[in-house]
Image 1 (cartoon, one colour):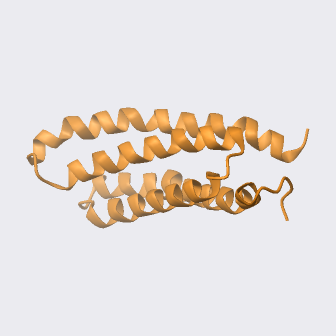
Image 2 (cartoon, rainbow, N blue to C red):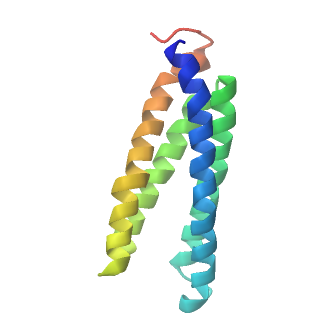
Length: 134
């Protein structure tokens, strides 16, 4: 089996799983918003995570089809995840909130952003209509 076939098989599944794993986190954030009031950064984090879920599902679809839009969508999603990690670390309070932000940033968001940046590079030939990677 060629490497690209393997990637096109497991990566869409991994992206869908990652999107599904974000849904309970979004629900937890949504339930915690009432603690802080309706107008605060928590609402922004909820919508950022919703956008991330949408982007991950879209990317899974694009990768499976080797769509030309895979590279820019992967790049944009990588930026979203890196931005999410940055603002989570920047806005977290001391103590357990900050430790949780560190774990999520360093174990999930930043490695995922790096993977998607690599995917963006890997998928560039798809945008150019070429079948083989340079």
